Image 1 (tube, rainbow over the protein chains, first blue to last red):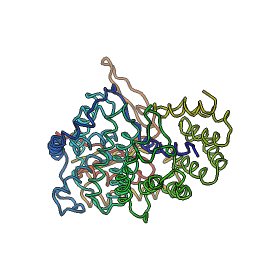
Image 2: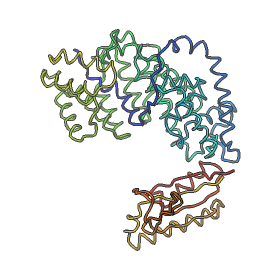
Image 3: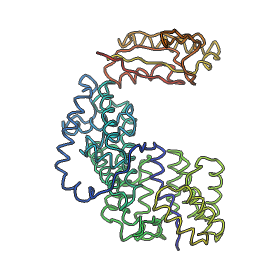
Image 4: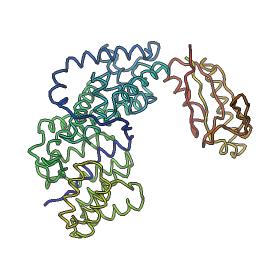
Length: 384
Length: 115
């Protein structure tokens, strides 16, 4: 059985992030280097030192809320300090791009130039973004503290969103062509680990870490040597990182409580835990998407649900759901909509219609690996 | 730290509400003012006449240019303001969220440029 039913699922990560916000790419893409593999590791100590300096500077800018209500877990000074930093960097009054940059700068100690390269922005533009954010912390008096209980759930969700975006920025980048950006995944995972350590009772923090690990574990199988996206069903599962999968499953634990990240992690777990594509528990995935839809309604989730139901109940059901989505116009211009329709049509042997839909998707797809994949399908259906 | 809380609402919608709803809105603002006054954060605040009563003034090449109406056509207009003194931005946000107009309009929180 071959197919690419999971293309939408595979790329949903990216789509969620884009729904949060689009990155302003106002700089010139810099040349990728070997920054990730060696330098990042070798300079771990250096980075830690830098992060500490940067954090100290930020602490001075922000208001220390000494007269405010104490935040939770004030028992450990160091632990609380890092948590305060995260909340200050992710304050919702800062622009989203600044929140991400500031979090990287103060909690990972990446240099401004490294952050600029990771986000395909010029050094000057990134420096300006950071300076503006720090000025706002000072001038608008953004407090340096863990928010009090009534604000905590909302602000925690904001922190998780920043880490999620960070991971997605890295994950949507591809091996080889974009080594610097893929390094963002490692940083996002590191920060999510830190957050789980600092907020052990926050189920969504664990959910997010699990989600990141389960996706990152599949990285090596996602793109082939030619740089084309390999759909989940065709991936060589021996190339997945078994240790990372195991860690992701352990971090997630049993799905007692739901939530935006926990549900997505549970879906990722269904894929990661299946020894072969044929073993995938599609009915469970469809149920999880249904819950996700009620938790966080989004047309992208609807598209993924259509894929899961097509896999469970047959392509005709999927096509009907997709037709409804298309007539709603909610995903107009989104390449995975015609791509998914094309895959269902191809599955039904309607090659001419499938080829037309692949062509439609190709015209909209942005990333090279996705384009390479769609072009291959177009050839297979006799349209290329 | 002082902040100006600008209450931006759709003045046409507010102009169209009935007497009962209008009285409820007024009561909401009165309650807000009393509570914030007790808390000691309120430095001042007023409701503004609609933009139909506004005048814009500019001086270009030493000439005073007077025009009717607001500076720019927007969906929401500044319909009032509060000047508050808060510990930090989070407190200002909390105070802003309690303004009745926040439920249908937008409150813009602007720090005062302190020297």
